[in-house]
Image (cartoon, rainbow, N blue to C red; front, side, top):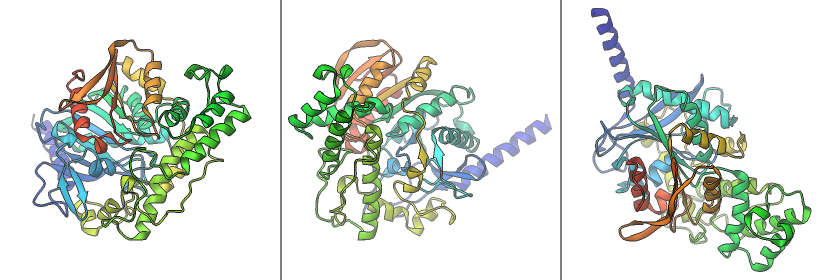
Length: 469
């Protein structure tokens, strides 16, 4: 028995060595040491691919609490947006970090993965940042396996996939791969404002715009007259996306261009975006770089959804102004600091951090116009699901994702009802056999950012398998 014992001891030592190399005890701008185990380092994808992650243990019961992987979308946006602006444990306030009282690591162990290579601090030795849905899900699975090699003590924890936006593609495509991985205790998924079905989201976006006052009745009538059978505006009689009718395509393009060019924040339509430069804004170059990245990325996704890539252009006549509702310039500056990179164990070979990579997004091939097959297969395999939407988001609106949920074919259990946080209506929910669909009232695209208390309540209820009430 001596040899097996020595082998086990060596394996534990190797794991601990990898484990400790990634440990983070302090972050610049944070008063004092971090109060929970935190790790930042790299996971292996395909040869030469290095995907950056941050892992924070639960502040509750890390030995028993579930394990969540978080993915932001884009494609091309960093999951450190989730870590520092949404449900992570810290928020950046100028050059300082403050604690987020609604962090999801209050109830779970959290992995934030920057994927695919070229996003955030993640990189490839070859410098090739051409990706598609298949290669991204394959590399995410390899990275996940690499993580469990570093942290084998979590192999038996209940494991969930979580994310938002284009993670509505990342999660289902990774989910079906996990169905073939019995070594990982995969239990389910939660997708926020997901890009789950291009046609449904395109058709719902036009309705969302009209019923939120973004286009007038005259413009709406032209669309209905041109795109709907016999002028009947019920959803089953209208197709704004796949039409081959010139008049319909033109009417949709006119409406799309109008919305696109009014300087509206598509991620949260009621946010005040046109404002003078904030006192917290960094230099104009960084602000310009940010605005031309993330703002355009939101409209780019809408253009692709509506198949209007040739007719919709973004006006940039107010380029010197900051947009606080979508402005990550402060975070870009913080994560670009040498002391922050050093604290997070980022090598010199890693790129400068930006919120969303235009290199990745412009070279990314979207292979899945609908994720119905993958989501349905995961639910049928016994994986619990949650599809949730902030209801003021135009990019991936609540109506399209509700239609998607309805069309998965699982019976609805009970009625559509309100759910509450602190005595106030937080949103609405309906339960199906195997999953739930929920809205978050007044929230934009990034629910944990806009409605942090409701988001924490929601994810805790989901993890505990309890109904919203």
